[in-house]
Length: 341
Image (cartoon, rainbow, N blue to C red; front, side, top):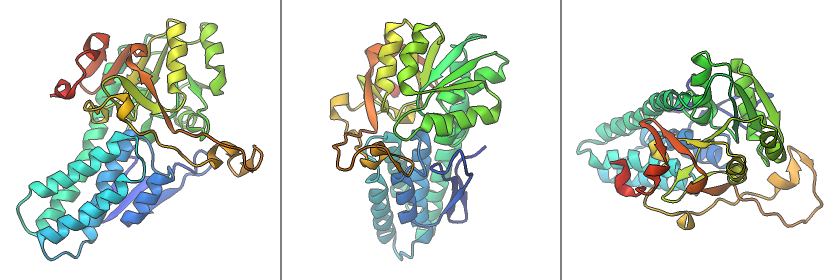
C-alpha cells in the first residue's frame, strides 16, 4: 500500500503520530504544512522523507505564480531550504530536495514546463522507492532461514517508506516466501516507534511479532531467542550507519552474542562523502523523554539529553542490504563516493 500520494497539488499520507490507536490521513496542501509534518514526525522514516521532500518542493511548484523561470527557481529553492531545516540527520530529506531542484534547473523551458518537471521528478522518487524496497526485500530474504527469529529496532517498514519497507521489507519478503519466521520488536524509546508502528504493521499483516522493551534485548539474545538482527538506516557514511537511537547498543549486543547484524537501506541513504564525525545528530525536545504521551514521568526541570540517532561503526555490521544486493565487510573498505557509481 502506498504511504504517500500526490493528488492535484495535495500530498496524502498517514499521520504516524496517531498510530496505532487511530488511522488518520493527512492532507498536506502547503510547504509549511509539509515542514511541520516532518518536524513533528507525522511523516517519518528515511525513504519516506526523501519522497516527502520531493513532494514538498512539488507543492511549491504547483502553487507558484512566478512569471519567469528565474522567479520560479528562486521560489522552489526557498521551499527546499525550509524543508531541509526540519531534520538534520536523515540524508534522504536533503537528497529528495536536491534531486527535484536539480531536475528543475536542468530544464530549459517555460514556467509550466518547469512545474511539470518538478512534479514528475517527485513522483519518480516515490515510484523508484517502491520498486527499490521490493528489491531490498528480495535480496535480504535470502539471509533469513525458515524458522528464524529476527530482532528489529525502531520502524523501517511500510510506514517508513513509500511502499513495502526496508528492514520490514526483508522480513515481509521472507514471510511471503513461506518461511515460518518470528519477529522480536524493540519498543524503541522515547517515541516507541517499535511498539506503535512496527508491532502494528506486523500484527496487521499476520507476521508473528513479540514486543519487548529496549533493555530486554541482551536477555533475549543470551537465551538464544534471536538468529539475526535487521534494522533500517537514516544515513550511511564511510565508517558508520546512523539509525534510531539505541541501534548502536543492539549492534554491540549482537556482536557479543555472535548474531549477524544487518542494515537494510536504499542507495539514496548512502552519504559516502562524509565520516561519522562530520554528521550532525538531531537533538529533540526534552518532553519526549520526560513524558510518555501526555503523562509526565520525570520531575520538573530535570536535565534531558535526547539525541534522535546514534552511529553504529561498520565493524559491527555483517552486511548492508540494498536494491542492488548485499554489501558485506569486504566492500566496506572501498566505501567512498565512487563506490556507488
